[in-house]
Image (tube, rainbow over all chains, first blue to last red; front, top):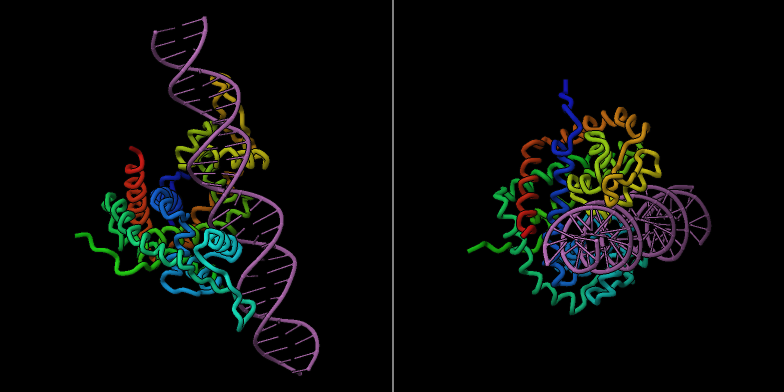
Length: 149
Length: 149
DNA sequence: TACGATTATATCGCATACAACATAATCGAG
DNA sequence: CTCGATTATGTTGTATGCGATATAATCGTA
């Protein structure tokens, strides 16, 4: 009953559309984030921390949907760059809390322009951004639900 | 005139929606592609070759939007797995042509079910797949155009 | 035809990403 | 209170991804 795809062709694949759009976005961010000395995932982590300082590794991972095996090295690089501090929680020694340094906090000011610059690049495509975003989130969460059980 | 975002919040970011949807799709593909012994980018490369055998490294990279620095090691791993052969073109020694082995060709049969399995997972999200795909392609190509000049 | 420019691929270094495993701290049932 | 289970983070190995650079082959022009 379900119509099988006529052919194995990349241009028909939603997955490839997402994959390649993600790459394109990453490339668009690069020159902008280079000025902040951040990679794209590092920027996402900083956005988390600017929103709420002192979060645990696990809390950040939950929001970014990243494993600790990805996050720990990333956060260590942010620490090496002097933007954050990683401190064991005194109440629960298993937990590591990430707090912004003065330099990390002040970077927020410089980063304020980033969304506007990106928005300008996106705008050129004449795509309804909010609609697209909501569809992607629905897709993502729909997939995640299947993986959960 | 342009409305600045009220707040730096990941849930407002189209980029994060694309980024996380891509991750979710990758995770959905994993158990399916594991049965073929392929990673997701390797699968994309094989799709290219099933479509048209004997393509050059550059041609494959153009379709997948990947640099040779990514593709060469990937193709070497496919060769190590016995799925493809990498042969210098005799006409132009700079060019390397990728041709399917018998094993690589026969894998196409097993791979035929992959799009249907993925489609079933996607379908649960109630998202209009074609619409979403076209919007993403428009976004991607809109971004790429800016980077070109 | 000689030789600088271009082209196609490869290599290296760095930064994700994740699965599998390791470790240390905390929790909880008896 | 004790010890197995759980939790939070870290480590290791493998596979992308890309920029910068290298190398070899081909092209183009004087």
